[in-house]
Image (cartoon, rainbow, N blue to C red; front, side, top):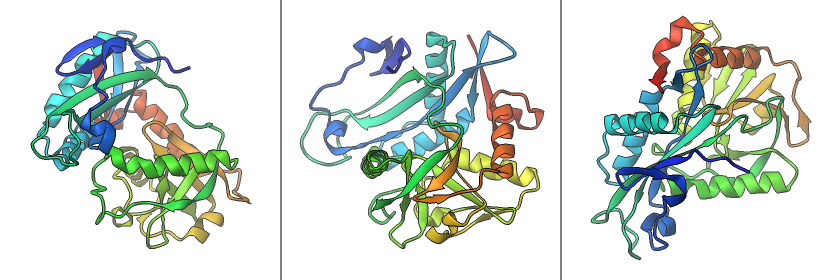
Length: 303
């Protein structure tokens, strides 16, 4: 059973999680007119009086941009301060995940984003590993990722996650841990809620933004880390068959961190994953503020 943090933020105030409720007529509930964020935090291993948040500024900026797509002017600086206050009020003692949400809070049956009330909420829950750390099995989904011409994919919009939900359930109910979605051009896109990387001949490869992927913050971090480590990186279209013969494949995201893929459909991937392991260890050290070269990625919140 999930353990939620005791304090939430809703309608411009902090209140007990159990009291944070919305109307059954809320517009976003019916039409998906919202946008989500996701941010991990951990107690500082070196200082019990502070919490570490990974790339807080980037997360707040992305949510602010997503809000603009809903005609909601919510500055990143406002989001950031509320997230800091949220952490200080909850004082978490274990690793956790924060879920901020901007949404149409008005009550109505007309599908629109103009002339309707907006709101911003935050809640959190304790979270360890989202996916098995020793490796996951994936199937190629029968569902396709949406196109940017049908939905603004530069935002992390709630409505887009119906496809992710269908793909995830299809994968799990057919005996796999996770799904891999293709785009409408038949190229590899992403997993149900994560970006995807593969390694071939020592080169780290990932689909580019033009492949209708989410602009992942963990993805961006991994590319920067790999380049700093001298690992060649390429952003380009990826064919399905490349996954099946890759030297390494892994998924990444805020919740998943870096999750190695051990099998795709009935194709087993190599058990040795030197680049995945190196990147995962490096990312862990950075999020725990043990790497002086990336300290500007880690925001410390005193509690």
